[in-house]
Image (cartoon, rainbow, N blue to C red):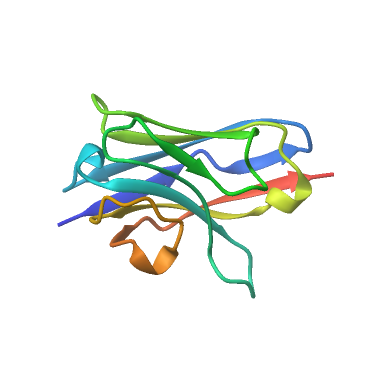
Length: 124
């Protein structure tokens, strides 16, 4: 059974940084396309970054490009999202997810396994 857990969220001032972590049991991140998503109440879940199975290719949504970095530690089977220069509009629940199909995608519907999310709040 697959179990995915995010951590690292919290309250931070604008311009600050956070590192989100995502551990998984029952799957190995290097067998999947891995992604980070975020959602605010009343809006669709938004894909912000993904990392291919080899760890060699990364993709970012335009609003986070240059500020967020996705990475993975295969020894720890942990996915990360380094978030720098945070803005109030980054406030959301953040989720990590795994997709069995290898092609890169930020479409949430194509992902198979999800965590419960971790809240990030950025104050102005």
